[in-house]
Length: 264
Image (cartoon, rainbow, N blue to C red; front, side, top):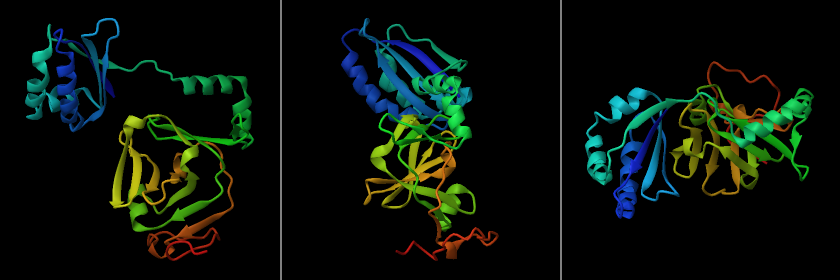
């Protein structure tokens, strides 16, 4: 991933018009292949100066894919007349980065407490005494915490879940939405709806599925357990849509099986 950086000096007195035009133009760049995220920040000390930060998967996604596209002409028409002088655009590669939650985790591990707990299979507790379960996506762009226990595991064999996971099944846990905390990567999350009332939320950079959520059950998320890093022990497991399982897979673990959804 690379970072495009440009300092934008906008003609004095045109700041509001520029921000209005940029609100329209951001949709152009966000639709480009290889686009990851965008930020426009305004300088506090020099109020007509902005910094543009765009993350792309590759350098060519910006310099070739975007700049040679027909939509780039629309971008220029909306924004370029505001600049004085015209900005220089540079590209950067990440070398060192750390966030507050990463630093806290590092310090905890350095003291040995979290490491000992993980090796013993004991999750960390928060200040209220609730279990803290941590996890994230493959590229580590998305990180989350869940403050609570995993007390139910549903192993789904339906065709939609098999296709979404690229595997024989998906293991999910219903969790309280209010106890799920996204630590970083909100800008990377996208959703897909195979059914009108159910969103499958995933990292747009690496493709890791994070959770699903139904519109008619706003208090519940269904966490994808493959993204959980904290040791989880839960004997309340069962298989659903077993009648739709992959032809090449056999269920041999002895947990209850339901042809479709779970019955009480």
